[in-house]
Amino acid sequence: MKHLRHLTTFGAFALAALAGVAPTPPAVAKDTPNIIVIMADDLGYGDLSCYGATELKTPNIDRLAQDGLQFNQGYCSASTCTPTRFSFLTGMYAFRQPGAGIAPPNATSLIKPGTETVASLLKTAGYKTGVVGKWHLGLGEGDAPDWNGKLKPGPLEIGFDYCFLMPTTNDRVPSVYVENHRVVDLDPADPLWVGKKRPSPDHPVGSDPEVRKTLKMDWSHGHNQTVHNGIGRIGFFTGGEKARWRDEDLADAWVEKSVAFIEKHQSDPFFLFFASHDLHVPRMPHERFQGTTKLGYRGDAIVQLDWCVGELTKTLDRLGLRENTLIVFCSDNGPVLDDGYQDGAIEKLHEHTPSGIYRGGKYSIYEGGTRTPFITSWPGTIKPGRSDKIVCTVDLPASLAKLAGQSLPAGACPDSFNVLDALLGKDDAQGRDHLLQQPNKGPTLALRVGDWKVLSYADAKPKKHLTYEKGPGKHELYNLSDDPSETNNLAKSKPEKLKELLSQLEEIQSA
Ligand code: NG6
Ligand code: CA
Image (cartoon, rainbow, N blue to C red; front, side, top):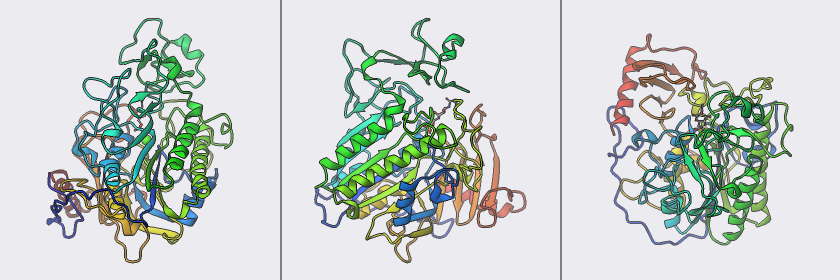
């Protein structure tokens, strides 16, 4: 693959081949900060009070924004989870990798050992690296993860020193924790089985009308297979009774393990990827957060996420690390109300606008799908303010490597731009001049270049619950400076512009 860097003049993309620089041995400059990337799940542009929400309060995240830099044009690279996470770690757009759409329960490792990632780059720079929370990038190899054995390869094989994970999502089985290579608290006498078929006629499933009556949260679509913790899930699993988590306890577990990781590495530089499951469905926050907003569990899950952020910053303050830590706060895709459970998100929405002024949300290539909260905070180094620079989660590998003094090896992180100066709010910093957006799997894609944006719908088969497929060959064109909410499709009135952007999109696709 050729390596795409900043586009200067179109038709002549700067395909700068990267210098083949060998990784330097671990050695960390004293002024290299700790780095924490906090990635929320399904959090929309309008979901935080610092981004204009008035129906709920997120004081801890607001404080990050007040003390740091709040981006008006911060993006994740896709409007679903797996592709955004894939790109965040590898610095490569997920459409380039077959199979990097929403990963199923038995997915095996999508990122192969040997792939340079943000974690491996920082590890080479001497960082202790950890990931806590939602993984959703597959574990193990072969036909399926070896749930009762070693879950390898996984994060530890692509640059992380430590992991404490939920393997896929909170609505996908199995509902267990994984620490490093093993399921936590798995009793060998009660092995874990994960599959696509109901294992026996008496296995409780959400689709059974009698079982359905007993659910603590009913489903609206999908999510009617194995029932665990009174909630129907995607996929079937049996066994591992002692290893199972309760949805209500997940956030506490992420905080506990993250605090332990920070404490353990307080004298090293560390990199922590805090991958919250909030506010992904099933939204079932801890009892102490239930009912704390008028927005139902969706709002309560945002408050729980805000609490997590507060616990992390408190820990840094307590250990005297706050001024030596860069925090990047972002989301993995835009918001969704009904994502398969009847949790009141629609009925209790009040005046709340999860995508802000932007159109669409999760699954969509309209702005609401990928333009999401994005905050950087590093007291004493980042001057507080707001930024109009375009930055994206796919840029974090190149930018954070730069911060740690690492050169990118040849071929690594091909779609990741070094936008470090923009992330740090330096004067005259450049953000991206173009940005590709994808929903789930390609080849439906959008490309933003300056203020122009083209949407290219290429999926052949429309799917029921995914709103983005509009059929092959459909294009839309918007000018975001006049029309940030993408209401005025200029595809017909500006055929030259459309053609120009489509050819640029094609060039990136084939790079
Ligand atoms: C969809 C699920 C949705 C959610 C999504 C992944 C159904 C009907 N819908 O297939 O509930 O799990 O996948 O979300 O099953 S993501 O944020 O992890 O990408
Ligand atoms: Ca998500």
